[in-house]
Amino acid sequence: MRSILMRYATPSTIGLFLISLITGVALFFHVGPSAFHGIHEWLSMVLILAFGLHLWRNWRPMLHYMKGRPLALSLVITLLASAAFFFLPAGGKGGGRPPAFGLAMQVMAQPPATVAPALGTTAEELTARLAAAGFAVTDPARPLSEVARASGKSPMALARVLINRPR
Image (cartoon, rainbow, N blue to C red):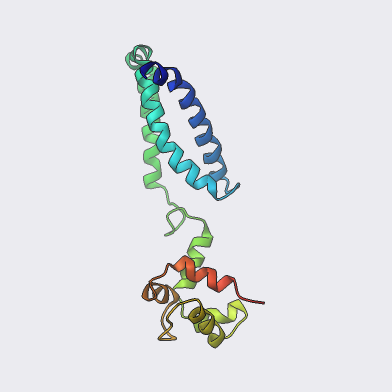
């Protein structure tokens, strides 16, 4: 078993790093399928295990790097570059999320009567559509996010009803 782990430590690290690299670049530029987000997060967690095996496999050469100045300097520069992001503005209250998330949150904070005209319908039609989908709209002045919560459903489920209107 140990020989198998040792044989695949470095190749696994390389493969997982390449996946992390490609999905990370795609996420940075907001391109590619939405699956890239999950791939990047989950396989980066697996990369930690592969890196640990790689470190174990190559411990002696790693000790050589740890004694030298280049590793120390690289780590200090990396730490300083990371720290800068705590002091730079992240582009608003969205936590670096795409603007569409902020827009969706604003829409969900509104009652059906406010949102209906933007969807090309009336408040009554929208309320009926939500009721048919199992949402309890007891107060027409209640924000959509609260309607979802009171109905025991997610805001995402309510959003699907909002955008998938029958033609």
